[in-house]
Length: 79
Image (cartoon, rainbow, N blue to C red; front, side, top):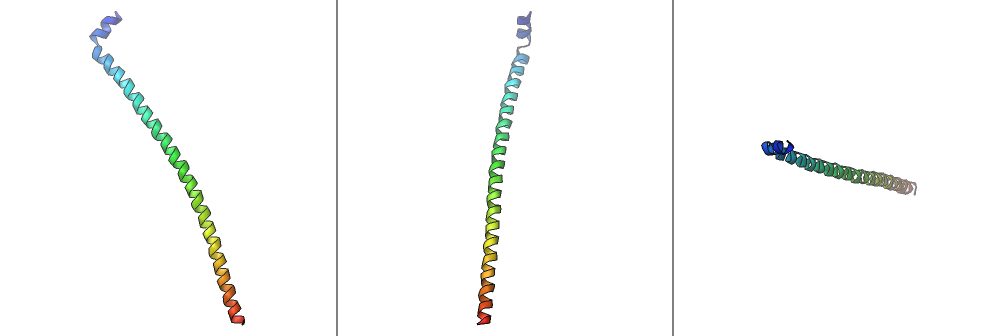
């Protein structure tokens, strides 16, 4: 009896098998994209931290330069 069902509905069985493999392929692609997005997100977080540290360092250097400018100007005025 199962053999007659397969013979009579071969196109439906093949379509079902193709749909299952197609769904598996689509799932694999979405999983790969998800992993790639997580990797890009982690790298972006690292770059944001580096940029923040550099901005803080630049701000500290700018403060130091302005302090030295003010110190030198005050020294010239006193002499």
